[in-house]
Image (cartoon, rainbow, N blue to C red; front, side, top):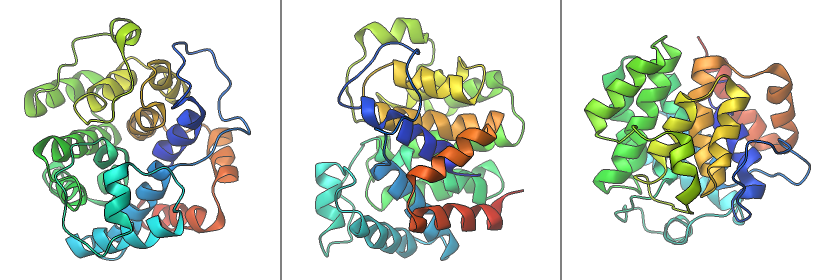
Amino acid sequence: MTMLGAIIGDIAGSVYEWNNIKTKDFPLMTRRCFFTDDSVMTAAVAEAIENGGDKADFVSSMKKLGRLYPKAGYGGRFGSWLFSHDTAPYGSFGNGSAMRVSPVAWAYEGIGQVEEKAALSAEVTHNHPEGIKGAQATAACIYLARTGSSKDTIKEYVVSRYGYDLSRSLSEIRPSYRFNETCQETVPQAITAFLESTGFEDAIRNAISLGGDSDTLAAITGSIAEAAYGIPEELEEKAFEFLDDRLGAVVRRFTEEYIR
């Protein structure tokens, strides 16, 4: 579904963001779950690509769609930007640039173009080098996974190109991991959750079990896991039960246009 992996991760992690758990044994996507800003901004990136994928398209789509969901849970600085007339970026290295980037990795061909567009989607708000890097690394993982690269190849690429430390296992990360909204303390952990997974649902459970910013962790991990494994049909169907008609339509329309 090209971006539903991120949305499922967001929904599944939503109830654990402020009530962290450190286990993989939990009910997945219960009635208490809901979509957050991660899903809204992922849809905004998809719409921006449909509208041309230029800088102005990303700005206008994020502001337009974001304002329709004012209580989606935006970070403080992003929320201020969203509801202002200002269109200038504000130097963020928050993990928002990575959680929303997945449509880029499906819409473009060639890793160079994917990384270039990932940077553009990030830097309209998150123009700090770490904010851009987080989006690019996530998009690169998705693109490599969807084009058949092995986990070893993906890991080697991320370490060599982006310098992330992927040497620690989930069992080493989990005990001391705490809530963190930066790219540099979210993206490597989310990638590791994918690398240690055995399937799509297992990847989501890995990410949420770390604790921390669980909806965003799971959105990033889910976006990569979808490209590697696909999504079980029952989870795909269930996800649409949590989306309203507007967001659901964006997902379906983007999928029809860009799925290969």
